[in-house]
Image 1: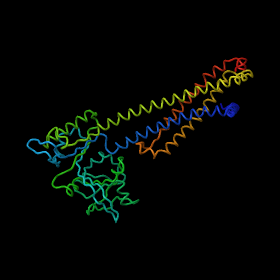
Image 2 (image 1 turned 45 degrees about the horizontal axis):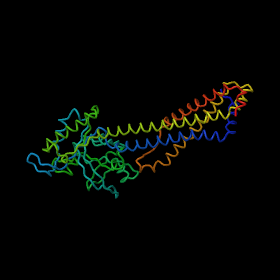
Image 3 (image 1 turned 45 degrees about the vertical axis):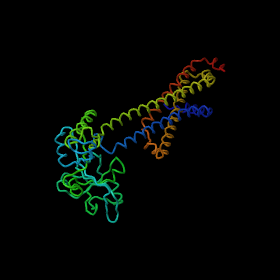
Image 4 (image 1 turned 90 degrees about the vertical axis):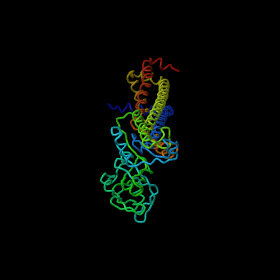
Length: 410
């Protein structure tokens, strides 16, 4: 039940002791402010690593060819390993159970794209439809490349969001024709990519179309695939090692040759990132707990001092008929009120500071420093509970003191 007289009494007490109230409020607000800033900066680091590894599926593997560095089986070093279409069939038949999505890849850089006088140069990749989940591309408009496009060798493209912005401005690119090195292609889709600017300035076309345009015979550049998500990290790494081994055998490459074939498995990177994030979360958690403990100690010390300072006042209240329960209730209510108001002030100040310095921290690998509301609210509740307990213990002790003893207290 709301007691107006009680609240008037509390506000009167706070107004008469401005310095005491300000010090206790500052301790609480500073603890929540520091807690918010630390968690916000920690989250900013997490956001940076999430963005850096967001461009590709976490279970993706890429196979690149290079030049041999060692002679093998009568073949000289310096020989280029050339992937061909039969490698596509070989890999899929050999590892049918392990592979989820698969796409060969042909890439041509610096292709001039023109639409009604606007032009720019982009990277064009010839891919299978399975390449979309490999790059985590999200279709914003239209569709991605289809197997029917591959069969027909259709001159169609799916373009990145920033390609559309560069060439078409605010207009939709869907259904329009663009010129790529003088050849007309129809835009069938526009995609976004969590990998950022470079991935959104990419143009995808059917693999068969790109191979006919940019390669002789059945040559291709590289392969991308995702392994079965049911595989553990260790099994995924073993799979990529076996894949490397059999591809070296197929192309007569020395098993010790590190330059002829390069296999990148994102599973290892994902495991390293997960380990780093776990350590970072533990560090943030310990710092946050330390901050809260410091705040709790500060509140406890202040409440002990406040009750000690008000010993005579409490003695007078008891002499006038106040019950121990009413004295305890008054002190606790005052403690909860100050803690809640100061905690909310610290929370708002922390959020404001994070928003103000957010962009300046990007050069330190901190992106969008923010903190979840429930985390800070939880921390504030902890301090409120601590303030309640800190107020209750000395208040209960003071309520037991006889009025005559309290009035003689120095």
